[in-house]
Every structure is written in structure tokens, then in C-alpha cells.
Length: 497
Image 1: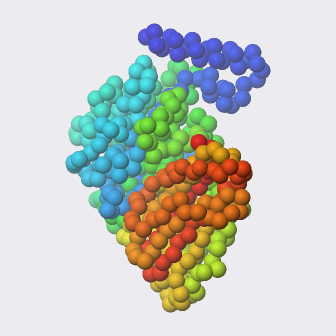
Image 2 (image 1 turned 180 degrees about the vertical axis):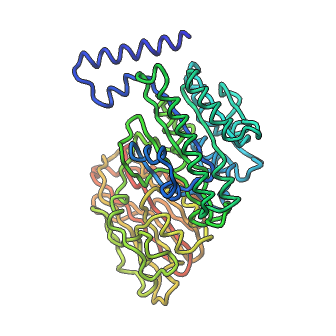
């Protein structure tokens, strides 16, 4: 194909230019190779059980690349079932956008938020896309007809057929993006439970199949000139007794194991979320992500430092919360450098973990009390800040919850516009209130946003008009209330518009 010749010519030119300039860096070497993407989905697989099982291939990938445990949503956003799970991974958006909230796909918005291979075809139609799945709705519904090849494996062939088809395509074809879904781990979970030997055996079996696909990749005559980003993931977890769809921590589990590209060997990250699979695939293939697409995913190749995430090593276990578990980390009231918490008007007593603004994780916070919608804080990543009057009031208190989270000072230019960005999730019960206030050069804080109604997990972008002569801006997040609900904050920054 002429497009292939053009692309190869460009790659040769890039490599030649890099060689002329001197020794190639790792990034330059990767840039000189043809990018390829392989995503393998292991339905119902738990990362913790992968680590327990006889899974040399998957453990080898973990040693050679990135391991990123992550968590899902729960009802009323969507159940932890395959339809919402695979749709989120493949489209790069959460269920509140793609609207797949069951396995029947009723009312979905997949045309508005298409799969990542459909976006590949739109941006670079010369690339070859291939998807094969043991669970037919993935290739019948989630991946669109614009994908070059979609194969729903006949039931009689099951994962053996899916694996053999993937191996043949990778070995003998010339795909640029491949998606493979294997289903047997989920079947073992339903039949025997995640705590069973049968589940471990199923993981061993799927590990062998993943190994066959990876061997096919490495057997390619052109493999030495290719840069394969390989991502392994799952659509949901399983309970010990078997089953999923609910809000337990085990059911909400997913993960990414990744190698290739710019991935660091032996690395572990806690800021990766489900939609990042699609975004990372697009980025690796050289496709710029258009903000108009509304993707929730963030490429793993472009990590965004966050002040709160720096607190992870300082988080401690539960104090008053008896149901979280002694081994679960954790929380702290100590803010990151440059931040502060003003508790001068804060009531006394209450649950230690939640007295004033706290910094915590999804696991720790949701285990404090399940099924009160904390599970749907989907757009926060890693460590985030939370003010939770409901949990604070679970022990005797005096006064009210009145705590203010204060940011560092950000550089601004007087007379110009700026944008305050942060991720938030707010659940309301009167007389609770959340206020966002901005001050300039130490002046009087002025309210720029007030929360008095439920606000689903969103990324807020608030336009600021910087006063003439101002050089610094500081943000305050003030939560007032009592035995009400909660407010989370993450990813705060101020940028020039």
C-alpha cells in the first residue's frame, strides 16, 4: 500500500536523522520503529489472584513493564458487569458518557463515543485494525463496523479459537492495532469463585494463551523494527464465592499490565484508570487526542504529576474505622508541601480519619461505608482530598464540620484570564455547602463556585479574570455541614487561558 510505503519511508528518514545526530536514546530508538498496539482482555481476572497463580507470562510482563491496579464504579452509575466494563476500556470514557449500563446495551451512546479502533480508522485509515473476542457483544456491538476485521469466536471454539485466530493474525497478517478478549477466567469465577483452585487453574490456562499470542508477536519477521505497546487488562473482578455486579472491593477490581513504548520496567502506578487503555493505544499509534472527543482516559505515556499523589507513602491505616481492615492504607491529615488545611472553625470529636479535610484513596474511603455512592468518584486518581461530614459524625461530635483546604499560590498575570481546573465529586444534604474561593496576592477570597446540589464526578474548568497587577492566585475549598454527605477534590491547577 502506498500509505505503508510512505510511513516506512518516514520511519527510515527519522532513524537516519537520529543516527546522524549521534547515539540513539531509548525514546529515539522507539520513534524509529513502527508502533503497534496489542490489548488483551482477561474477563473477570483479579490481579491479586494472578500473583497467586502459576502465571509466568503475566508475571514476566509485570517485571518487564508497568503494573497498575485500579478500581471501577458501582451502582447507581453502572454495575460491575462486562458490558459497562469492556465499553469503558475500549472507548476511553466512563459509563456516564457511553451509557452502557448493562449487558443488553440498551440506550448506549457508542456512536458518540466510539471504540479506539474506530478512531484509528478515522485518523489513519491506512492502519490495519483487528478485534477478536470470545464474548460476542464486544465485537458485535462495542467495536464498530469501521474496524477492518471483527471476529466473534463461535461458542464451540471458545478461548482456544480466539487464541488461535489472534495468533494467526499477529503472525501472518500485518495488524497495527489488535484487541483480544479471553473469557474462561470469568467462567471459572462464576462456577467456582475467585478463591478456588479452579480459578487459579483458569488463570494458568489464560497465561499460556497470552504467552502464545506474545510468541506470535516476537516471531514476526519485522519484529525487530516494531515497537509493540502491549496492555493486559480486565473488565471487572470476582467475589471469593463467585460472581460480580455489586460494589465489593473484589468486584470493583481491574488493572493494567503494560510493556513497550516508554513504559518503565518494574514500575507500579496508582493513578491509572480504566479509560486510559484506549487513550494510551491512540497515543502510541501517533494519533493526537482531540479534546472535542471528551475522552476520560489519559495516556500512560504522559503522566500528570499531582500534589496529592505525593502523599501515598505517608498514608496510615485506620484509627476509628473498624470495617476498613488493618492492612488497608490509608489516610493522612497532613497536606502536601505548599498546601494547608484550616480547621479553626472545625467541630471537635467525631471519627478521627475524617475530622476536617483528609487525604485518602479509593479503597480506604469506599470501605468506610459501601453503597453510599462513594464508589462513583470515578475521575479522581490516586490520592485525593475528601471532606466527609457523614463519616465524621459516626462518633459523637461537638459543633459542625467547617474545614477549608488551601492551595499553594499559583503564578498569574494581572489583567489576563486564567482557568482554575480541578476534579470533584459532591453529594449534597442540607445544610451542607461547598464553596470554592480564589484570592489574589493575599487579598480577600472571593467565591467562584458554590455547591448545594449533587454534582457527579466531573472535571471543573472555571474561568478567572485576574485583577490588574495581580501576580499570585490561591484557591480555598471550604466545606460546611454536619451529619450530611461529602465532597472530593483532586488535580487542582491554575493555567493561563
